[in-house]
Length: 264
Image 1: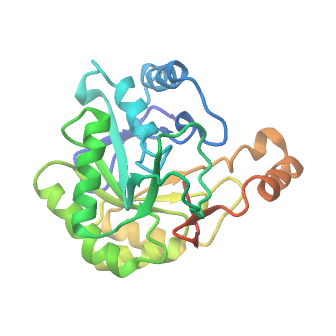
Image 2: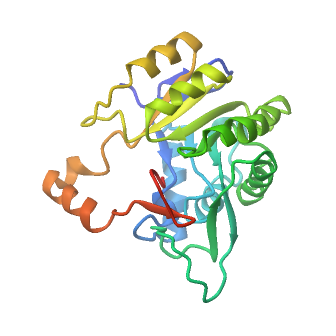
């Protein structure tokens, strides 16, 4: 694979590099990084020929988007493809409140994520993302982790993103989650350009996604694979990775006192 080869994204005019940069680590996932290092990471990826940058409001409670926006200051707008997400609104934390939430980002702003797949909630989320990014549009917008909210995501979030696509605020509309079954339903019922499948079709985990892949080929929907190297297992080995899963990553996430299947 040539990581800087550019390929068409779905049916859109966007051409993205085979390899993209995810924005979780620069938001302080498990361990914080200096803002200077975060900015240099994004800018180095662009200098090496990568043009796809992925972020989300959830990542560091807006810190990832803010740092990506800072990294892109002065960069020619046509030289990069930016993806972000909707589905988590950010609200102020209540001092002293006993909020049952697992949020693995260090030094995040005093905000907490709340699931909101409503039409109005998505419109507010995109407006806030644009402010953090310092941009007037985002090339790709994914519905983020709608695992237990299919109907609301389709009737609310999707309609909002479809409207933003018509208004040229975004070019591509997608869904980002870590299971293929619900993506099959989305592919059949709405007009999506791409899906971000995280951690479920990797070098190690070949989860059965034949039905999804067939539908995507048939409907010209691109698949973006998130975390294809299985979270560092190639560097640490299976025993260290298994220990990390048990000691640091369980439970994965808690949102509004209910377990959520994916927080990234």
